[in-house]
Length: 236
View (spheres, rainbow, N blue to C red):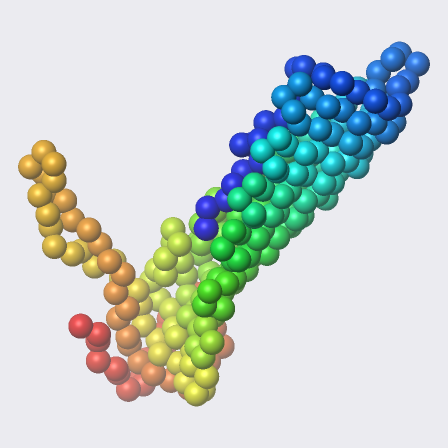
């Protein structure tokens, strides 16, 4: 789920190149015009006092393209960025960064529809997996699934808390047959191995520990598994 940031395509700022279009009384680019930069990039759109300002289209020589708003030479407001790998971001920008609400379509067909902050998925959002049809709906922090969320599959869903893109702590599986299994995810230490310098290291894996099965209940992110129900055996 890595993002291709627009910072990878730095716009030419120091060398002006060729320009054809409107100017103000001071001779500055002002109004509508077309610029061919010395590095091969082009910009066609609005200017104000020699800076890209308003609506415009910036084409990068590597095939990337931005169509949308500018403010003082920076992508700002609503705009769409088409990346060379086939991915696309359509949404809000603040001072050259993806920020606010936006939709990112990845090269493999996955999509993220939600909030952004400083180029990262941050806030509430939905990530849809193209190949499986499954999706994650919930909270994001600095690009990772964090806090309350749910994985939604074709015939069941998991609801609980997440940490660093993985389920963490209490949660429940809700099935279409109108029952749910409550339990907890734990990090289980696996076999220790010898490291490069003779130091032993260990790896961990997620393990679901079921507690009980109930009829459907209202989910909250801090809800504990109900007590007094029939226990289910722990998975080995």
